[in-house]
Length: 83
Image (cartoon, rainbow, N blue to C red; front, side, top):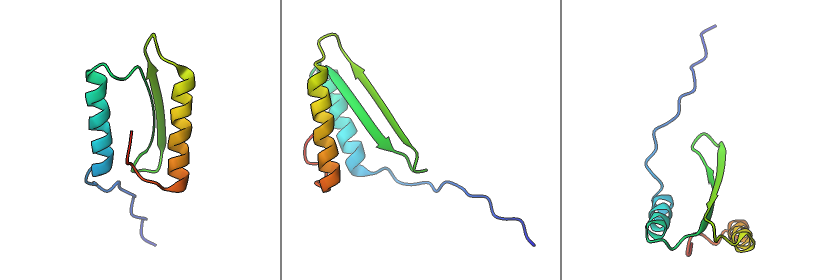
């Protein structure tokens, strides 16, 4: 019986929509327009990551509300039309 072939991660091209959203958010952050941010992502290996950051004047209620809006858009599959 031969040895099983080890699994290897395939090199993928960046997902354009993901890069666009991140670049737009980075521009807004550098312009001082963002006071808090929450991020959830799925990696190529199907693992997930999440992170958040906030400034002194962050309104956590608004951030949680924005997260719920994103969750609803994902569940309804409305795509990325606004950040």
